[in-house]
Amino acid sequence: KQEVTQIPAALSVPEGENLVLNCSFTDSAIYNLQWFRQDPGKGLTSLLLIQSSQREQTSGRLNASLDKSSGRSTLYIAASQPGDSATYLCAVRRNSGNTPLVFGKGTRLSVIA
Amino acid sequence: GAVVSQHPSRVICKSGTSVKIECRSLDFQATTMFWYRQFPKQSLMLMATSNEGSKATYEQGVEKDKFLINHASLTLSTLTVTSAHPEDSSFYICSARDQNTEAFFGQGTRLTVV
Image (cartoon, rainbow over all chains, first blue to last red; front, side):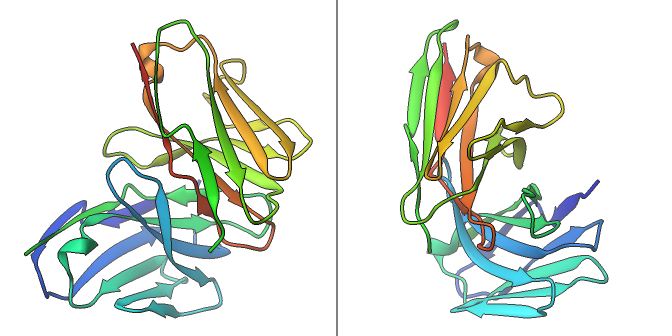
């Protein structure tokens, strides 16, 4: 059974810092991996999607890497801003069929102005 | 990205009543929708997989007679919480995707049973 772990559970940084969020998964046979952002009491916003054949994806100040063989992904946020404060969730998909995403518990990020 | 609309965003109901939550894919056809439940500071836990025109597949421990799922069209799935109890209070989120796209999520529904 796939298990997804995110470290740290919570993180507080001053504005402007670069930071890294970690995600690990126990079964490396994945189809893709997605990073999401969730604001309190809200739904999920997809940030980056990495296919299993890819090593990384970038969108603005966000960069996500994937090391499938070791079961790890990182989300790098450059020059953090208070508006980045949210919970970041990592999720993996097993195959291209009707398979759901398996989520980690998330990292709760606070960026202090 | 694609848009998934979930309604209502918040609902308060009395114990014993039923509540229906709608999930719509607005600009694409969703052959598959997923229903998740999220407790405070916890991750999303899959409740069931809903396929258009067929019965939903429920995860172990999820009562299918309590959480009724209907996926009657390619753009709409509904989750009905029947005979709701306070322990059913939670945040419910739906997700939709076409077979080859990434997953998109609704805004979530905060259910409070009093």
